[in-house]
Length: 440
Image (cartoon, rainbow, N blue to C red; front, top):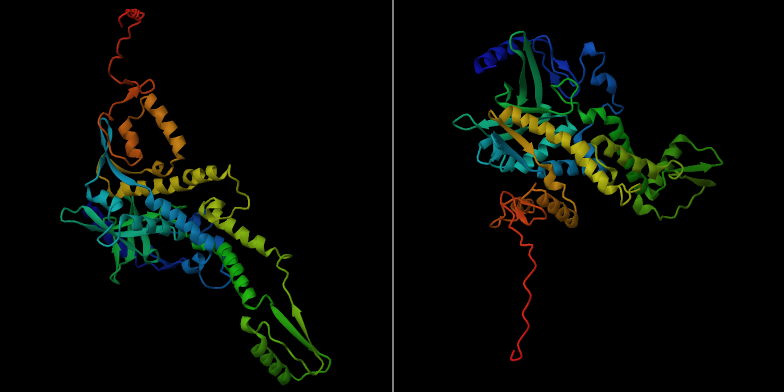
């Protein structure tokens, strides 16, 4: 779809936006034409995400600050976003001999050096995966140079982006985005102005919101943490019952309760001495945390967070079932089953939005998957013997400079340079050494 066609589609989308606004949890979804973007399946599919969630018990939506108050959620985000941001992402051009790396293109610098004048590329990629994990969508405003090339990105708040889709029989699907910009304005933008990346999605347009889907699990873990704080703030004594043989008037009950709380409530008064009269007796109600499996519940909440974010439990320091033999394998599975999906999604959207013809973006996770030095060097030796790598390629992997003659590929235990004839070997027996003379 060209620029003029996109402008005409935008005008039609504006005219169609007079339809009523549909409230769907995290904000409005503006209808455009016959179909509107949703967080789940449409009505024809039989259910939506909101139908699956039901009502929140507290009545308030789960927020990021409350979710990140859990150490397991915070640690999972730090690990995943850190791995994603530190993994190199390069821009390549297809050539007859394979591919060549392009370092000076503006779109390459956005994801390798600086996202904009203030933020480095590391921070942008960290924000990107954090938004995808927590809110299911990431959006950034595209700044362009005088040649209309993308040269900077400004991240937008996920809650301020409402995707709008338009479809017709001629051009098919076209997307627009009602976005709140950092200057306080709100506009309807085209794909030329905003880079929008949906997370895991059921409709291919908007990713599912993890804070909504996991609201009950996160709320349960947060409630357990709050109980622990209140329990120990009250000196591990949840409540007290004062009993008396005689009948006490309601006003007197309130006075005794207020006086007891003022004198003996809180951690500072835990060691106070109570003197009772009127034949009163104090009974302390203790909560049996062992019987209620309080520790087990808190440990299970860590496993739940690890399962939700695709992180091995030992990464969140849940080591109850970890052994030295399976931790290394689980660390490999973190990249294989979790990170590779994030790399593929990001690279696909980078290529789709910013790559020129015959160019593409690619993440290089092998840079972070190095084993111990003994295993690496043994693998390098095999690669040199089989002519797979040359010495300089190995030195680059180890972050070392090239050396003269290191570009030659070698065969047969590294003794023969590929393309050169092996020197002839003289199989004749060596000449006998003459006997020394008497003078010698």
